Amino acid sequence: MNEFIQRLSRMRANETIRSMVRETILSVDDLIQPVFIHHGENVRNEISSMPGQFQWSVDKSIDYVKSLQDCGIKAILLFGIPEKKDPQGTDTWNDKNGIIQNALRALREAVPGMLLITDVCFCEYTDHGHCGLLIERNGEYVLDHDTTLNNLALQAVSHAKAGADMVAPSGMIDGGVGVIRESLDEQGFSHVPIMAYSAKYASNFYGPFRDAAQGSPQFGDRKSYQMDFANSHEAMREIDVDVSENADLVMVKPALSYMDIIYRAKESFKMPTVAYNVSGEYAMVKAAAEKGWLDEEKIVQEIFTSLKRAGADLIISYHAEMAYKFLK
Image 1 (cartoon, one colour):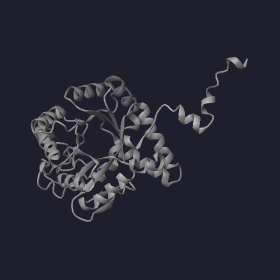
Image 2 (cartoon, one colour):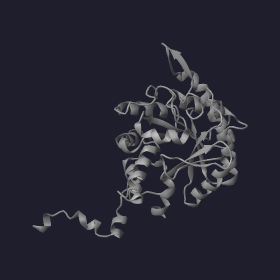
Image 3 (spheres, one colour):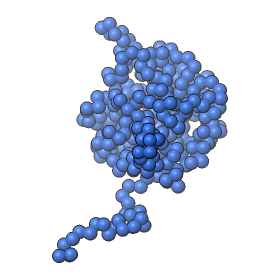
Image 4 (cartoon, helix red, strand yellow):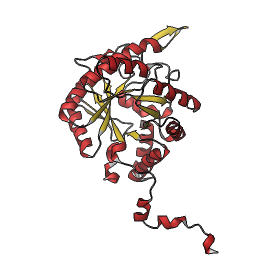
């Protein structure tokens, strides 16, 4: 009778055997830590809805980013919170004194070797909190995709001039990847890759991020330009468009409730695929860990591994900086 028993457990007998046959390998090289740059000096503001995460002024961000590098983190994603906002978000293409431009120059000099990725969007920079220019239509203000494209190009080129290694347009603006690619190439930055937020859902998991980036819409929502969370075929169409416009990496955001989309994206396009483990996902784990209901380190390791198993090559996460504890 024993000859018919499939004893798969033989390959799970101890950690040495398990590690030898492990199918999914997680590395600190896979992780990107978001960093929020706040206007002013000597700023270190803890984000109340994201315990352990802070807004940093440019001067204070240097030591923080150095500490990330010491933990093995090789890439960060920069978000800016400017002193002044306006209807267009003009700080985003302020070559001389834009908040992200200043951060790029300082970090490039102080933390060589760190890959500097910049968020290319307008929600943190506009006084209305939407991701581009607004126009009035039928008595209400809506996002004007077409006229926003020019400003996206200005922003991406300005970031590249200041030292960005990669740009990440996050607004889901139709045609945005193509316009940015064309503008970067024309201005001598053909070497700068684009990480496209290709399948970004209008998700309820973003709540804490709006505290972090201070970019909540002052009216309405973003459902007209971010995806309906009920749709998956549409995500494939969105990714296909970005690939055709020469995106170098594609992203699915959020992560945990969208692993089916991550899997489909990787299987369909075979592109470098990024999962954004977003603020609400981070906050839920932190809250449960603070209650003693789960082991934060073990849960984070399991989440990261599951995202890689689903097909993500890279993971953007606020938990990235703690990963060295279980990856060293």
